[in-house]
Image (cartoon, rainbow, N blue to C red):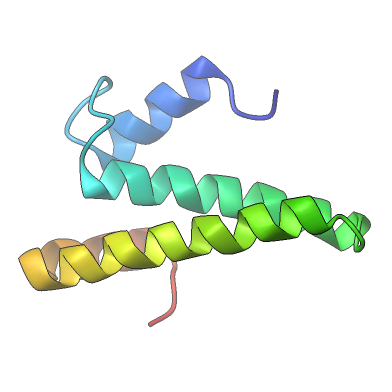
Length: 89
């Protein structure tokens, strides 16, 4: 699998509050971004994989919803995560 347990823990440790923090918005956004980047690479090679394309669109929507939530809740945390992950907005 492309996303091992150790890689997830590294993402959560870097962007969340700790290694086991899977619920914070920043940790989830980082995980979704990693998965989105992986699926984008897959779709570049497999253009007709419509199931993956649908999954990608759903993930982007989930990430967008979390970013919108973070914008309303705490704009400084939103700006920090967007800058760290290199997201546009």
